[in-house]
Image (cartoon, rainbow, N blue to C red):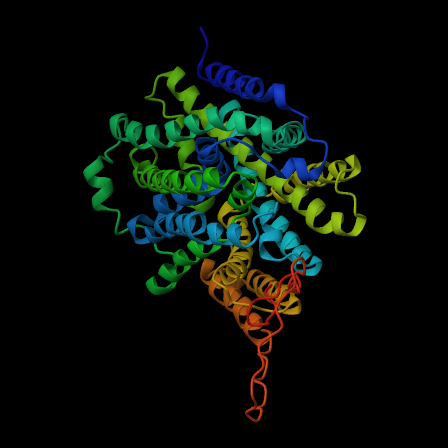
Length: 499
């Protein structure tokens, strides 16, 4: 008879093989980076892909850990995340797709000029690497906790698995894997709060006691208003979430992008609420997590609850493992594709060449190795990694929102504004006093982007001087077969240059 560890290993292997089997027939089909950026499927596939892309360290560690430790005073965090996802998928992205229907990447949605594209891609890759590092770090903790392995060995195994999947699984194979994984993710986040209530064990933390103490949990040391503004900053960071942007821009069919985005936004809002509920009720299972780094593993504590039957616990652990694995794999591939398509390709001019694909694969593997090194400190809170990534996401999101709602700027303003916003993020994370204020830094970061774009906006053309009245002559008719003069690319009706 299998013990709990054996059941967990069996469930992880079965789910892993099932995912690989679902996508095996379509692995390695891409022959160019452009093929890697394209994705078929209908609205349901798009919605499933968006849910899986977002089901990483934020939903599986940051949100539940924060609600576990600080209670309902931090409820604005999941609410702002849900609102940000809905705004991105239902408001910003449809406008950007209408303005640039042939764009294959989020950087092309922002600008078709090479310098702004490169700046967007570099910042996006940095943000993706930060979130991938958090997912790999949490996956290492899950492997170490379930199988009693050394932390470094478990972390190495997690990074290696993510790198292998990043090399094997392209968009077509992932589309089929997402169909199974979305069921696992939804089942996980729905089952954990229910299991916490039904199987709270022998402790005295009943549902009534946990909810009654939700307003008197640990304080962060910051004023309440600062914490509330910081929580709102997470929603601003979602507007530039690389995982969602990459999955949404990969859909070529307009109907699938529109309806899939709406369904995905609704599912993400639901899963965010379920994640917050799982963290809030985590004290019914385990009440000894006193630090933020420990609280971020609250879903693992609930999944491995000794009161649960071993097969049920194994299924929950496997679903958690697969969610982190596919999230990290997608982020690593997104970073590689961004840097290859939007930075290397304009320089090398090799759209259809295999070497550009190998460049993207090499960046993904190098990202996994770098994530392993960055995650070696097991005592570090994953929130700090996600915070830096979401601050960079706020910079990208501000640029995309301004572009979507018709705020013109010059090519110089497009890339200088991103550089200014990224500079604010670097300064914010480098100063401990500012870093402790959390996502409050999203406001000055996004503000720097808006300010620079306003300062470097296109000059308005001066109105021509009034001419003396003369008898107007009728314009000469255009002869048949003679075309009207064409406007240059990017020229608007009023003569200004659109970004």
